[in-house]
Image 1 (cartoon, rainbow, N blue to C red):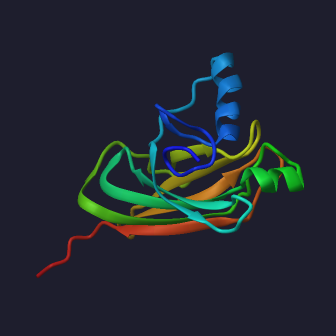
Image 2: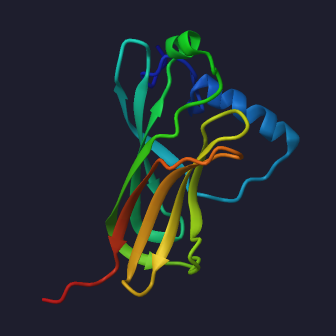
Length: 172
């Protein structure tokens, strides 16, 4: 067991599942540049069975909206589960998100179109699947909408989760 409580992938640079580390190396070697998105801090890791499967909870501060933090939960397959079921390089698309005001809100230069913009992105397979968090600004209702979903090259997923942060200031 590593220093962080995970079974594999802990080193001086932090904890990362060995399969995520393996997915990063070829992409970095090819010189792909990903758009700047928020970084996540692992705040919880819940063991769900004896096979090493976990629910990981990460805190993601919105890089363009100060004072908003999202907590993202997703399923991470363990080594025994990967051995039993094959499909070594992919985790499920399931995720859940909850976003709240965690300080004074300051909105930076954010997208205002209906597609929104990516706040956070994390690989869920070696090549094709990515877990994304997108922010959509509902200007009419003065609300930020955050959606977590899987992005896959050919197999779209209907699994998603949504959270909203109202931007109104209550009157006294």
